[in-house]
Image (tube, rainbow, N blue to C red; front, side, top):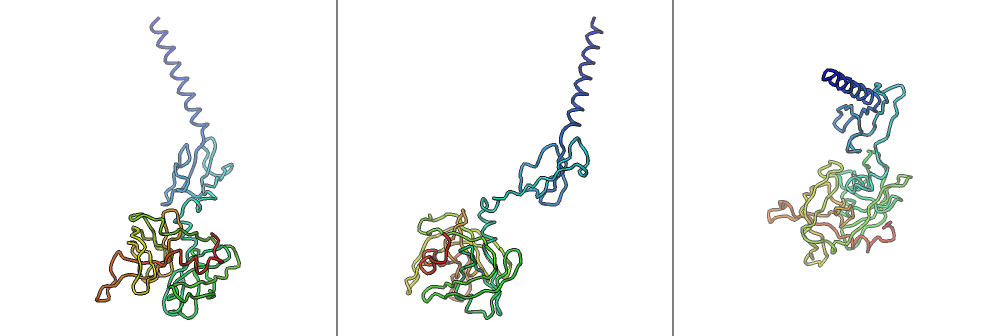
Length: 268
């Protein structure tokens, strides 16, 4: 009797093992490459869809190929959900005859903002977009009061652009990001804190103070909040009495001034 029970149990275990193997063999195997170039095989897709551009699905444990199906893992609205990525695509390098600066699009038609001193310091201007395409720049207007210039990048196609936020709605200590071609390195991102909006004497012009590190080449680039909205255009840094830039004290032309000057060209 005991022997018969043991035999039944062994047979049951065998059936379960065979069933398990059949289930495993019938499962779907995914082959995907992570952002570091490492190839993975798994019975499920990666947890983070952004970690792989293409996922190869092979049924019944077949090696990818033949009847394999390619599934796109890149979400169409990824840029909209990633404000930093959208800012990078909306920002470009301004290459001149003497040095470089930064600009950012404010409309899908190619209108953009930069600093007036970036335009005045260079002769011929070329915009180098994030995808490394180069286009000519036309100067539309230079502000008589602020360190601002409106330019047009002739791309003959719609471009991503940035929207604005009033810096007076920010709180001291809020996180901010500066995006630009710092010392010629395109799409450099630095982060810091919002300090406030200060009145600059003797001109009494307001400026947004922030602690994100900026360097030559950042001028004209956007200072954004965590949602990718422009608080101002990076303009200058505080200098010591010896003429040495003071670390962690930068200033941007407020978005209010940009809108006052060029609201008719924005898409906000």
